Length: 314
Ligand SMILES: *Cc1c(COP(=O)(O)O)cnc(C)c1O
Image 1 (cartoon, helix red, strand yellow):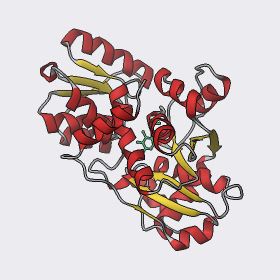
Image 2 (cartoon, helix red, strand yellow; image 1 turned 120 degrees about the vertical axis):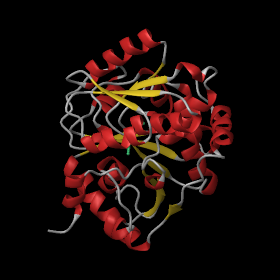
Image 3 (tube, protein in one colour; image 1 turned 90 degrees about the vertical axis):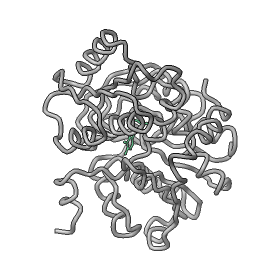
């Protein structure tokens, strides 16, 4: 299983490509929350989300990159892999399910990747990706069941805890679970007193329910929050969370939207829904953390046009 050595190695691999991201505390936000909140700004990554740490780490460690890479995703995982592939000059194709968001297709194509539209759902798109990868001999990259992705994402939690080993807790939004699993790996090794608390939308609770039940379950995806829209659990991230996650909180999409607005007005920060879910989770439990020091990861900023408009006061 992924451990601190893997994360330290990933940090060395990433150093030439990605600077550390800032973490700031905002007095007006602290006053609203009643908590000393530290916002880790992954929304300033070049792809607008933390996932690029995992993509670059995985590609950097591939032994034979000449085969090219292939993955399936509608969003930030696709951009992460496409960005890393461009960095290393590797052919990259992404399978997206039918009716993709044109802005997301454009973002991936701008990075030089090929987009293939196939399948009515993400599960069907994954099936197409598997077949294509086998036919082309390309390396198929899972969105989550990849130790190198978890190690790369772990560098984010190393940055947080190296700077603030005295934190009482870190809130992490969960879709497939790479962020929460990576946080568990790093906290266990360097700050065992810091609790890792996962947050998911109550409108897509597959990872939460799988963690609570101790077995993988599928759940309908009704959330508007793309980055958290995952209908099933991933084995590797669930195993790690089962061992070391302190707790798992569900929040509603409306609470996430309110947290997005709060980040915009009180932390000068644009987040997509998933990027505000950690703050929403903390606010739902603010009494328990009153006066404590807590980090929330603002994981991403890739809000679409309608989402951006919905953040402005009406
Ligand atoms: C992917 C993503 C998440 C969820 O992360 P997982 O590692 O899939 O659990 C949260 N926020 C943003 C912005 C994301 O892109």
